[in-house]
Image (cartoon, rainbow, N blue to C red; front, side):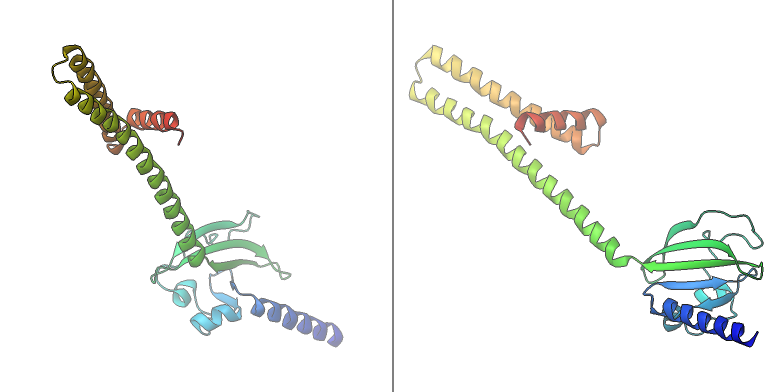
Amino acid sequence: IRERMSETLRLRAFFETVLDRLVICVTVFDESGRVEYANREIRDRFGDVAGRSCREAFGPARPCATCPPPGHDRREPAVERRHTTPDARVVELTCIRVHGPDGRARTVETAVDVTKGELLGRRLARAERLAVAGEIAAGVVHAINNPLDGMRRALDLSDARPTDGRRQTEMHALLREGIDRLVHLTGTLLAYARADGEGRRQVLAWMRELGL
């Protein structure tokens, strides 16, 4: 019996050492919601929380919706969600109900700080939006320059032959065409800016025509 007890204590010490080496927070709660075990990551951040309730150990925002209800003995999949701390850190929480060798149910919670990854994701999304905005701006400039260039040439040709009625009529028609294209472009952009569904489809179709 003594050998078995010693072996059990050695195994417990080994597993606690493994848990202490993890860079994630691991907490075990008993059936009443009090901390039965906390690894070093938890102890370094919150001090000695053994025996305290979840709310006492981690603040008034606890317990949260991720915790299985006390006395809930059915085997359920892990509950996962994100939690934002008062200092704006983003933490991924995972809770699961397990049964120990004594038959009692316990709740094991792991917490991983994903703030850096969250910020990186936001920066990447912002960079993608800026890249798309740059492509749209380049397409708009191209779409505006083309009719403007044609209108300027029409004016130059009209000025070169001010007494040629036929030429004047042709150039005026080109000017109207250029103006109509600009009006269509600005109307399409306004419809897109107003978040109109049809307007957005028009802009996408227009971008496809430009090869963007």
